[in-house]
Amino acid sequence: MAIATSESLSRADSAWLHAESPTNHFVVTSLGLLDSPLDLRRFKSMLARRISQHPRLTQVVSESSVPGVPPRWEAARDFDLDAHVHSVGLPGAAGMDELAAFIGDLVGQPLDIGRPLWQVYAVEGPEERGALVSRFHHSLGDGQAMVRMLLSLTDETAEGWKRRARPGRPGGSAHDGRSAFTRVLDSLPPPATLTREALGTAETLARLTLLDPDRPTPLRGELGLLKAVAWTPPIPLRQIKRVASASATTVNDVVVSAIAGGLGDYLRSAHVDTRGLRIRAMVPVNLRPPEDTTMTGNRFSLVYLELPVGVTGARERLMRVKTEMDRIKASREPAVGWLLVQGLGVLPAGVERLVSGFYAAKASLVLTNVVGPKERVYVAGVPLRQMTFWEPESGGLGLGVSIYSYAGDVTVGVVADLHLVAQPRQITQAVSRAFAALAAEF
Image (tube, helix red, strand yellow):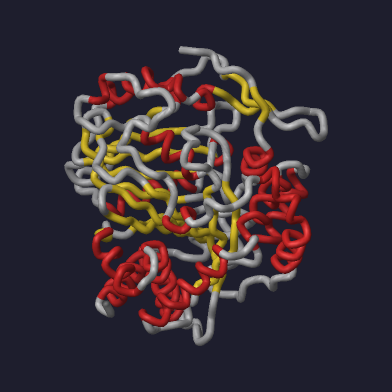
């Protein structure tokens, strides 16, 4: 195995390393549902051949004692693959509820900072099938980097696990790798040129800074140590595209509208008066150009997206979402969000958490959208039938919603702090109902 060269963490990577807190671990958790349990020996053999593609998977973070000097990635002493790959068996009659409970328990646990910051669990179950659960610290890379890293461990055929992954390419089907929302941001100027538009950027930053905190709802509050997750059944992408085409909107507009509808229904079930209510989501925006095939590091901005949860009409809610999306696309907010992320990385850890909390208080949730392979892929020879993931919540937020498209389907995942949302499945069920109502309108 090649020994990775030491290098400093970027400002953005440092920001997410120091965002870790006892009530919110900055770890991206993903789930792949498999047609059968993995052969653990085969899976480890494949990992051993391919892990050299990802130097950070065999590195640990070394903090500097000198103020202002960023942490560094250093090669781990006596790296042992067995310390990171685990076999888990669910009870014989276990179903999706038991799998969700297992993942929720993991989400509430930190990774060992003294080891490489990742863990993978090969799960036997639910029922006669299998699952692959992975946990990667956000300092290793952003959501898109995580997806590319995971896909480099998959193959297009059942026999592909026997080969080494091709350098610089994910092992799954080729895909654009950006959400429908972020593709329209290609014209965003690179960070090095943003100072040329300093006046407009300063105005936007001032406006975002002066935003009032989001309205209090049961989605916000004091956090605890326990988390829970849920995910929707696969939503056929062809149905989403049909609604988008008929309404002159985008796929992302349609899915976000269903999420807003589901959140509104959930709040009303909690006896919240949602008339006229809008809540904000913090949305990561991928800034990687299409030709960037690196699988490490954080290259994303953050923007605020208003969700019209108080609008009960499916058609009107969709149009409100489209209007808000179009506003963000025409604004400087993605550029300002990139500067904020970069700036957090140069602050002392304590100050960084205060600033992060200040801006997070203006939102109620994190909303993430990632595009996966268009065709089914295999993990160590086993077909992967559905995928989803859960992002960490920054600045003390307790709710995260993710959108993942894979093999012609879209899955919406929800992760929540149990102090706030005891049963996130109520939200995913409401999202499914909201999409069905929207589809019936077109």
